[in-house]
Amino acid sequence: MKSNRMSRIFWLLIAALALLGQISTASAQPQAQIPTVDIPTVTGTPSGAMAIVLPGEQDQINVRSGPGTTGYDIVGILVTSQSVPALGRSVGGDWVQIAYPGAENGVAWVYSPLVELTAPVPIVEPPPTPTPRTTPTIDPTLAAQFLVEIQPTRLPTYTAPPPVSQPTFFANSGRTSPVGRLPMGMVIVTMMVVGAFGVLISLLRGR
Image (tube, rainbow, N blue to C red):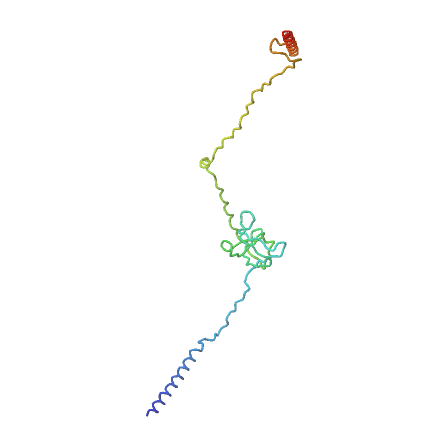
């Protein structure tokens, strides 16, 4: 009895495993429908006219915001052999309008002698010249408040010194005594004579 029950449980497990295997196989198969019409293929070749940069003395050319060098800023560059979609040309044909994502509205201009067009393009209206930038003006009243008047430096004045008085010496022929302005030699001789007389008188008195 016990063996019959075990065998039933065994066969039930096998049947459950088989059912689970069928369910997983069915879910793994892709549910796709085979298309009955042709699917268009996407190619990388753009349609329309293209502007190709010609080789020249420079490896790159300027891309401007308008058809001219005056009043229109440079918004980018193109290198040699680079191609971009051409949208139109100026009235004289000197400039070509191209699609350029880096410019305003995605449109810019290049000089036509520097590029080659793969197909004719229509004439388009050029953009208006940008308004020139205003030059800031200086308020003279406000500027006068910051002006500092520098006084001129006065140089020191030079005063001439008074004249130096130099003593004048006169040359004398001989020395003179203070008394009577007598010659010094005569005074000495006189004193010697007086002294000699004094000695002589002393000798005479001593006898």
